Length: 295
Image 1: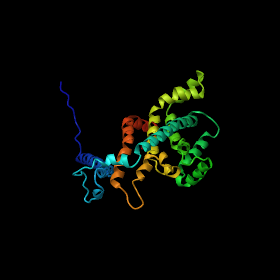
Image 2: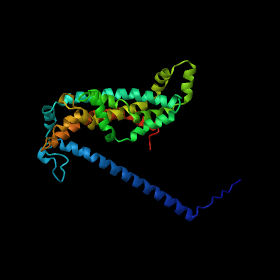
Image 3: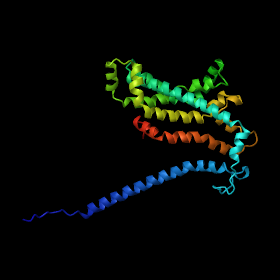
Image 4: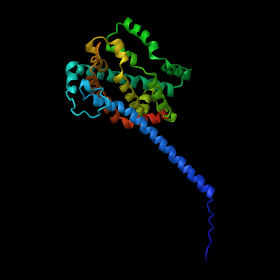
């Protein structure tokens, strides 16, 4: 017994449409990859120039065309920067401020975000909206009032001024709240039925689940505080309390600047940030994705 199978032939017009769609798809992907490659090169070139300039003499820093790999690298630049300024002390001050502020932000932001996400109270959403709206206020607007308050409290030229001003972050609360909203309410309700207090639910249920978001917030805060230049510039006067960003500025005098040393010190200041980012990259990406901030 034989069975005849009839296959409808594909019309030439249909084949042409499929071919065009494939060509559009390939062209779109090629264009997208071209933009990504161009953006990556644009962003990495300044970093490569910084590395190159840190190994040159002062006379050769601005040579054109750029000599990306110096023939005689001046490795001594990386020794001179530790001799000309007290870079070790500036490192210590920066690590101290970064550690304290990052820890405080993780505590305050996660607590506030839990309240805004999981606890019902009157005008919760309106209060959250008003708090988040403070992110829209430029720092230049509040800079002088904050300085007057710190001066009134006799906290100028102290690290405490920077710690108090940066211990809370509307962005951190927003980030953590978005993550908490993705956690089912049934978990917290079951914990309440079992007799846990609100702080107990936060500590024993929410925090263990929020590790990716905490890692993301920690990296954001670490990078911001480590690279902060304006805050220490406003409040810190004495050399003993300066951070590494202010220390690098000491290579700039009234009439000249030692750019090769500035670049060498900048490379040294970037190393902790790069190490932290690489070691916590997995949590960082996961936290951003789960908090709903991805594009």
